[in-house]
Picture 1 (cartoon, rainbow over the protein chains, first blue to last red):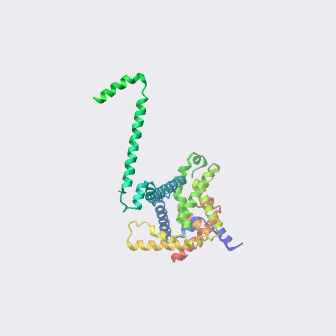
Picture 2 (picture 1 turned 60 degrees about the vertical axis):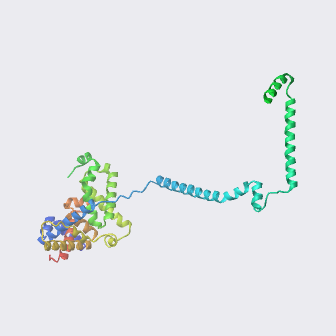
Length: 161
Length: 180
């Protein structure tokens, strides 16, 4: 039988009261104070304010991330499109310039052609245009049906008045 | 002591509300680690809830919960392959820090200081106890359980409990500088 087993047997034979009767007032006081302090400590820990760390649900996180990404893409796209259009605009204006403007732009110092041959040609072209228009008028007037001739004469009479 | 029939009528949530502070206090004083004590308390009630139907009420609900808590604590340290108490130094607080929580009462500053010293000395002695001695000591002198309840909670016979208590008290007495 080991020493421990012997002690157990002796202790079993003795009552708990016997053990605790041996408590000196100082030991008893120390045990009571120890108990009180552990109780107070535990109570303080249990009643302390706690921070609850709540994770945002994953769905919301994904939605938030997707929203931000989409917003960034839209903003970046808008800005780059604006810049592109802004850079492209002067070229387009140059492309759509009429040939006369282009010519003037190419030779800003050139003066209008005042030579006599040119003026004669222009006047001749005008006369040709007028003759052509008069011919068209006469052709149209000839095309009026004979049934309408009296009416046409009346209109001509009115015009002469 | 509540019987099986009395307990059966109780709602489990009422049991939790009633006994949680005691279970937590025992685990806190045993482990000296607030987080670990909270985790083990949660596990204890989770296990109790799962086995609530099989609780026959041979002992009080408190004793049954204490038994679960003691086993969980043993399992925890066994699984971690750590020596109880010694290895807890990193995360745990010194038990003599509990002396700071000593109710002041109507004592003088000198009396408070002496009381703190005594609590710190008892804490040191408790640190040096073996796992079983500490469990028995805390159940008896902190939780104020009687021998029968301690025997049911620990699974030890009363003689062994008395022996552990006797040795534990001797160590505490020695730490306090008293003579046997």
